[in-house]
Image (cartoon, rainbow, N blue to C red; front, side, top):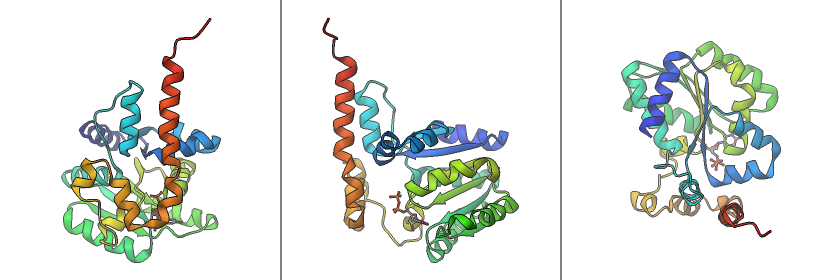
Length: 233
Ligand code: UDP
């Protein structure tokens, strides 16, 4: 997490554009199933391990990462970094009510950060140009996008050049938690690597999406076996 924050702080200072993807197993499985999603992930400048499943998989295949870097925690760490440096931030996504409540809470917590724009995430493709123009006009250092992983990451990837914002990061359900609409999983659930289960209890509509998790586990185990198995001659 510290490494990520240092890297992104430098990217803001250098105005080096970085699309940050906080990857979970569902996104990785999407990249395996869809060429477009794969291409999109490969062109992101930084991918960090959001889900406990990604940390487990990286360790299992012998390319360990030290810890989870969740979108929610990284958002707060970037706001802390921005507090010292008076960064400006644009918040895009969720309903208008939730995004305004989240902006209010963030502004109270980080008074030195300038929130230069707030907009809900329910707009259609024919409104993209208008949304992009508003963000360009506000010219933030950071843009947080919460529109669900299937939508937000391809949207960021498609428009990042036009947007011209140094750090753009998809933050999924983070504004729902910051606004108080949903609760973050208690520390115990996080420690037991059951954050996904807590989210499922709060939002049972997530169940169909989670059906790919066992497939992810099987894929990681099989792929490792295939790589490490001695070849028979
Ligand atoms: N959302 C949005 N526009 C959309 C779809 C979703 O702003 O077209 C918001 C939704 O209100 C929620 C957030 O995106 O606050 C994350 O949605 P979800 O939990 O479905 O996505 P996930 O993080 O699981 O991919």
